[in-house]
Image 1 (tube, rainbow, N blue to C red):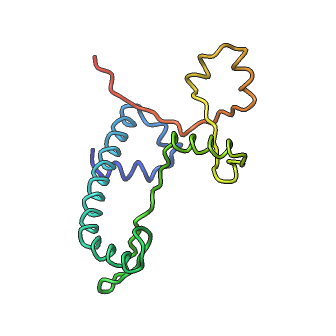
Image 2: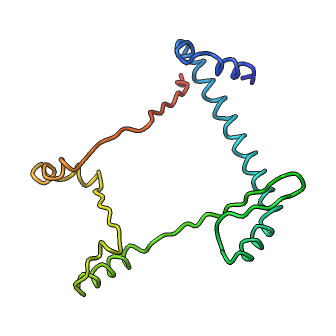
Image 3: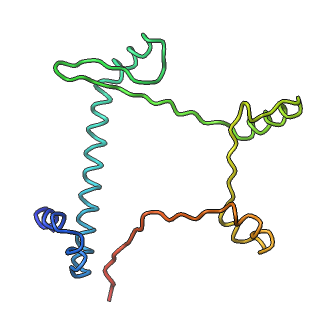
Length: 156
């Protein structure tokens, strides 16, 4: 499918495009998915090149500021570079549970130190007997995500 046809389709109001033949919609989805995949590969390649060019300079600036992560700014010719190395912290849940138990045993309130979130597995919830499930139902809210569709050509 040509880029021109894909461009025309995206310029068309969605209400009008929705009236197109299902085969056309399927072809447009395939073409757009291919374009997206290619664009992601191109972006990844260019981002890798940018990282190769600026990573050491950004690292040196961070170290000079006494930090391992975060944002630093510097110039390369007429281009202002903002390099961000975000901090990603993960906590060992087993260790935290043990700490909560020790804090509680010492007579302190663990809520002063730790935020707690409760989750219920939807699979387990659905498998419970109605008597148990009904106790949890008032605490349960169901939201829907973005709908997705897959259009495939039916083989004969």
